Every structure is written in C-alpha cells, then in structure tokens.
Image (cartoon, rainbow over all chains, first blue to last red; front, side, top):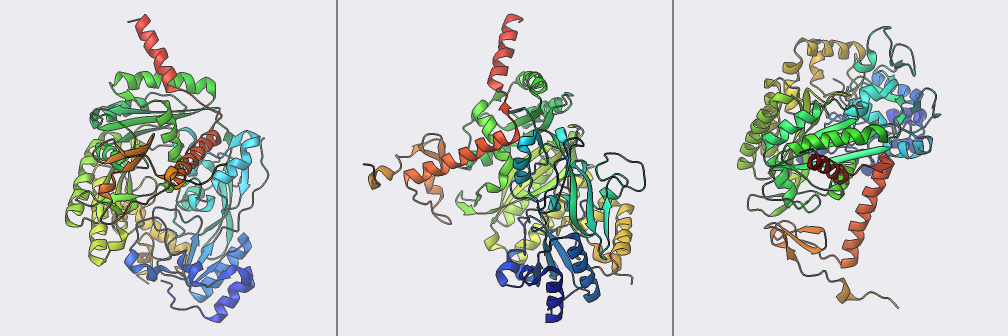
Length: 502
Length: 90
C-alpha cells in the first residue's frame, strides 16, 4: 500500500509544474476543509485523515500527470468533487495528494438533436439545469445534495436519484465519460466507442465497471449527460396512514400500478413520524392516529401526469388514509431536493435537545421484507442507544429503488442522530458494530448493503465479501491489475487485501 | 417614518401545539423551550428576523418547484373530482 508521512519540496515542485503554483494548496485550512464528508466520521481521530497537499487541476492531461507523479513517488491520490457523499469515498484515509476537481467545470454545447451535453466533473446539477432551462431540457439527476453535489462525485459513487423511477439513476443518465486510470492513461467508457450512443453490443461493459468505484479505479475528467424534456407538470402527495402495514401495502399497490410518470413512492414509519412531530424544521400538524406516511411523486407532460395522479389518488384514498393537503404536500416534496439544508438536533433520553449530526444507513431491501427489516434495524439501534445515549433513532424511510421500474425492492434508510462531540474509541467502536449488524440483517433478508451511498465505510465494509461472494475476488483482481502500486484512494472497500500476497 | 422598535420585535406569546412544540408566529413551529435548557439554549430571535428566515426558506422552496417543472397538479382538485364521481356513481 502506498503510504506517505511527509511530502518533500521536490514533490510539491513537481505538482506545481503540472498545475501551477497557485493551484497547489498546502495551508492547514485548505487541507482540513477536505478531510471529511457528511458521512459519519471518527471525529476524535480527524487528524489522521488530513491530506498532505491539495491540487486543483484544470484538464485531464494535468490529472494524468499528477497520477503518474504519484506512481513514481508511491503517494496516495484521492479524488474529491463536492464532498457531499454519505460514505467515505472522498476521505483521504491514508492522506497523500487530494485532487479537487472543482476547476474542471466546463460546459459544452447543448446538443438538442442528440439530447446530450458534455461537461466537466466539477459541474453542479442545479446550476447546470438553471443554464439548460431556456432550452426546455434538463439533466434529471436529483440527489438530496442536488444543490451542492458535483457530476464527478455522482459518477464516482454511482449516485441514486430521487427521480430515478421516472428518469433513471446516474448509471442510466451518464451516456459516456472520460477517466484517468490509476497509472495515468486517459480512456473514455460508454456504450462501445460512442460518446453519445445509448446502446452498443461492442466490447465489455466498462462504463458500469468504472462507475461507483469511490475513486479506487481512477478520476473522472469529463462526462456526456442525458438531457430529457423539462417536465411540464409535477405532482406530489403525502397520505397519513393509521398503521405502517397499511402504508406498506398501499405503497406496494402504487409501486405496481404501472403509471410511467411515477418518480418515486415513499414510506415513513412511526419512528420517522415521531421525529417529524418533534422537529421544528420538518414539523407538520398531524392527528394522533397517524403512525405512518405513504407518499408519491410524478413528473412529465401535463397530459400524462394529471390522469395518472388521479388514479393513484384513488388508490391512496381507498386505503383509508388522509391526504395532507396541497400546500404541505408540495412544499414538503420541494424540501426533499435540498435535504442538506436541514438543521439537525436530536434528543437525549430525558427529552432534552442536543446538537447531533445526521447519519443514515441505506440498503436495497426486497419489498416483501421491508416490514421485517424495519423491526430488525430498530432493535439494533435501540440496543445501541440504550448503551450509548449520544445516539438517537430518527426513524426509517423507504423509497422505490429501480431505475424506470418502481417495484420489486426499496431503498431503505434508517436515520441515526449522533452527538459527534462525545465520540471516543468506545462509542465509535459501538457504532461500527451497529453498522455491521445493520448490514448483516440487510444481507440476511436477501438485500444489498447499500442501494445509494456505497458500502465502503468501517463496519459494513467487512461484509462486502459476504454480499458479493466470488465477485469480490474479481474486484480485487481488477484493482491490482489496474492500480499495481495501490496509489488510487487506498484503504477503501478492503481492497488493500488485494496486495497482501505479494 | 418607520424605525426599529424593540417592543415590536418581541415574538408573540407562545401557544402550545403539542407536548413538544409551541407556536409564536402563525404556522411557524418551535421546539418547546423547556426542552432546550441543558445542552442547547434557544436563541432570542427578533420577530423580523424569524419572519425573514421563514420567508426566505419559502421563497427558496417555491423557486425549487419552478426549477423542476412549470406547474403543480393539485391533489385537492383530484380528490374533489374523485369524490364527485363516487357521489354520482355510488
């Protein structure tokens, strides 16, 4: 494994020759600001993850030269885009050179004939779509970090979109992309050799291979994105339900209803409802009988959305629930486009407010198993909270998971508040054990450890070989073949083990 | 002439909404201050500033709506149509 304790002047000068002195940052501020992401973090050990140097390249050529230098010197390289990920892909676990791609924010021609646009990895989706609005098209990748995440990070994490059931997720929305390999070669992967071609049977499926690697197989330097017709109409509805079982059954019926404009169907369990009842940002007046919420959203042409919404409202009404009304439904849905803005506070066992950061464990769970995983996850977190009251259970949320296919399995998240100020080795260890048990339960019900965020953090990463079986050994073979010196984001996904036998 | 009047900036008395929540301005809900005494104390925010923050948030949410689509379909209208149909074809 590539490790480094200090970068000497020769290395810093080499980096400056590549990107220019002003884009080699060595100040504490520049480095500390790039040491973590919103993912749960061993705050008490933050100094272990501060990069030695930050560089801001402007082109694929510069990225390639940085990577070649890192290979010569055996220095870790960690790519970082918006730094909004909910796993630790952008955290420099072994320090080294942090490659911040924000300067690579070029936007190419809007190709309305082929419905595509080529951009740099430092482009933000919100800003891109504001630019695209006069053209009547949009790039519909919509994470909760929509207003601050960047295209490069979305590819590096194989991002999941709130509108995925309607428009697809990142793997469906990125037509092709350019990537600098761990040894410095620059290649483009997509559908065969086509930059804007949507389907090809030529060669291996390399686009999928290089997507979601958490930066372990290279650095994305350009991407060609899908443009869809900007929706004329949006519909969102939140239905209060008397029991989780009713919400789950209603959600299943809506998921299987067959309407093509469905962007998502959501479920909130009773713990999530309790959280909303005590949170001043998200507080919504609701009757005492409400124990769950079933919600759904649609996007598309007016002529399609309105009739489909009416039939889905008919299904929801038949469940015996109560519609929250247009104002709350529309504003609550709108707030889901920027959940990162939410100020957070948790509760201690005596009900007092404490400053807590938000953490969510996500998994892909078969629809029939969602009620079971809900009970198992809460039991695991209840045990943690009973032993360590710096944690707080904020409830479970489920969302249709498949691109274009809102049925079959759901993205499930259990949100946990963590009073990071009080973390130490004991509580961090308890948290890692908790995460491992949550992941184990997900696998045991036939699910996957993560549907959206990735599974490279402490705890869950231990079970990736269990989930993937022989495919994990293939991952290690690929990693070692493409990154012989293990310089590209070492320490992630347990892939250091690929180098242990020599 | 308008000016800053300290007395005008004192929020209205809290109205209890639930065991955990109070309301001082219409539709603006706050955590019960009694639950913010040990680890986090509730800040004293002038009325104009509280209203500014809420208005700003609403403005942002309405902007996001317009960002994603031209119009919103009303669930209340759809429900009214469904109920009318059910009434005419019981």
